[in-house]
Length: 316
Length: 56
Image (cartoon, rainbow over all chains, first blue to last red; front, side, top):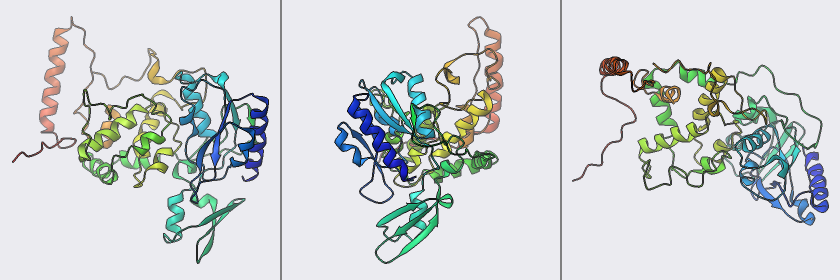
């Protein structure tokens, strides 16, 4: 994992020196532990900033939207699928990109780690192979990475990039036999009343900061429907119904486009399981259209095309 | 949309989609009447209703 950093720096340096790319987009170590930040590098001297470990949970695809220069970008499985989606949706041309592929073994859920050490202040997290050490002022504990994966990483079946120009390492083994939609099925079995209760409780802490929207690479509209005031589609206060409307529509705008990268859930400051909304739609896309987002540059998304045999059981 | 709304707790049968040509007046009447019946059976909507601010 850590040896990836060296390799990324080497590739970025080479690309910037040769002028293959104008800018290289990657991660740098965050100023607080477990929070790596995106970084855009223009000079070959700056490549030492680049870094890769299990805390690169934000989606870099946000930074390529509608750019006109040539870019190098690091991409693991889900990020590469978002790049494919961007190309399909004409947000960027494939020729502008030099994709440095990263075989990914998942990201660590920083909230779970914080809970595991009893919410004591963490000053450093160090990773070695499949294990990592968490240390603070008066403690040091070691954990197994596989027990602390982000929930979306635990069910990921596309760890290796689907589209790349160069890989930093050999592909990793994909996870098989994961029951990706166990939680969605559980909710599906509930009654209307239980479902409403479940989702109302889930978003009850929402402060309408729109961090989930900002973190999402799919949300690139120049003006979001929640920000429009003429007409005003949805109330702007944290009225529970307005908040629910926001969450339903945010999810619906991602229907058939979401790669379950988990950036929304990671970015949420109050820990709302926002993926519970999008996951239902991912499940529907898979069941009704056999569609998994961002696997192929030549395939149009299901809600973009008409086929005579499209699912239409809901029309009467 | 129907799938997601029902997943969140809106009762099945409160939202309908139909495709009716402007020449299909009888179909329109039939569908509308059937939907009115079914929605009446469900009673007033319980969820996703915004309360009007009470003005003193």
